[in-house]
Length: 188
Image 1 (cartoon, rainbow, N blue to C red):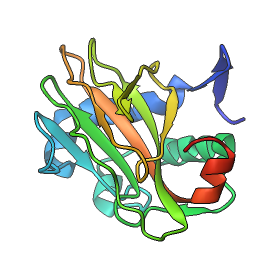
Image 2 (tube, rainbow, N blue to C red):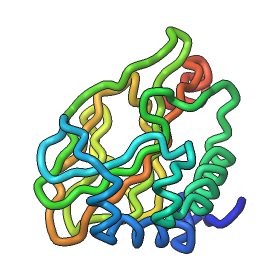
Image 3 (cartoon, helix red, strand yellow):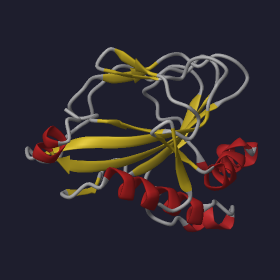
């Protein structure tokens, strides 16, 4: 299954794929030029949406699109959605957050009654403490490079506050997935 492996029945994305993206995000000029403050989260957070489209500015800055698209391919093979399409509001996004940031509790927008906004998230840089996903009041503690699914248009979700010097960097792949498929796979 591409460059990933199972550890204790948990999928872990190979660091060879994630490290170039982490390195790019950690390079301060890249964040200053190409990331923006989303304006609706507390604390220090920057990010970029719609990375499913190759942005010439990002290409000039040598953003590792090949690795990003390989990760997406592995994730889609693993989750094996049958009836889905890319979320048109945010698509693939990356967020970079430092100590003090936490995602506020919210539910994402579903675009059709038959679908639920579903995000596959991957924390490629895990802070010393915090930054963990909270879905339907349950904390989801994942390893670095371990994807998790959030039926974001169905459940309230947020994160715990980031603490420490290591930033939280998350890649979030967004899809609108058929509600019946999510029920069948027991994801809602």
